[in-house]
Length: 462
Image (cartoon, rainbow, N blue to C red; front, top):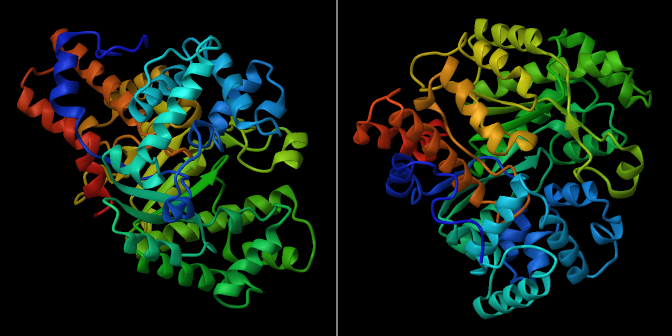
């Protein structure tokens, strides 16, 4: 039987009351993920647990690589069953890793299987879960609905096909699927395939030979996203750059369009200006910006060439861009064009700095207009979540927090919300039992419900 019991992560009676009475049954709003809208639309039944559990999940792939598993058993040509057994073998001794917890919970919640995940149980788990999948006709929509999810924001590039979202609406699911607008492939001007990406945007909008035409194309695409319900945008940067002049960005764009490679400074000029322009655009149309800072991408050139992007070879950057973030926010704020902003920080040593700068740009009318986003990616674990809550409470306001998300490509990542909710309730329950905060359960429960769901609904104007 599973080592995870009913009071998992809940270390006192008050924490248990907070979780089971107020947090556990709140619905889920997943305002940032990387699920495939096409998979949700097609809604095809799964054939085996590998397809649901391991395919495309680079969190799990990294763990296997850390244990020395051959790539053939991760992204290679080994069978689904062989890859599944390899993962179970690795997970059995991954004590303390969040996947050690998440995977065990996923097994119980989605397949009604309580066997401990390890090498000796791998065959039994494979057989039991596959039988469950066939018997219950498990599909993408059944997984999302069964997780009490009401809204899903996928992350879509500016040139992605939006017709699929209208078709999903016609399906009549109990949840909505809405695209978040992401222009990263247009911003990353140094990328090998940049002109191809620019061509895709041109095909949907207008000819692009200047920054003026690029801005027009981006605004037209944002309007298209808004027409299918978009309420959020997304920007991912290793660091925040200086806001360079528009004409400097124009010269860089023309240089690349003419077939020349950009320098490092060219790239920073273009990204610095375009980040500023996009955030102004998002303010104009009153949608929130989700700004992700601190990921150092594609460290392993050999594996990038072999497997492509987003396959588990990114890491945490040590670049300190707090001063540039301050200047960007101040410029936008001075122009009355600072959008609602959720800042996701990947480097834990920057928590306090980012929380402090957030407090300089809040405003009336929106609770938590500038948000310190939840513990993200490499910080999406027990230690990271606890530190996030501590830093948020120390210099911000917990009651304004928009709560957790999955940031995942997996349809069964929703237990991460309950993982966070347990940690949140244990954090507050411990403060109550230590006499460090009120024990007024009506008041505390309202805050918990807001963090779990209500604050995000209000923030994104759903």
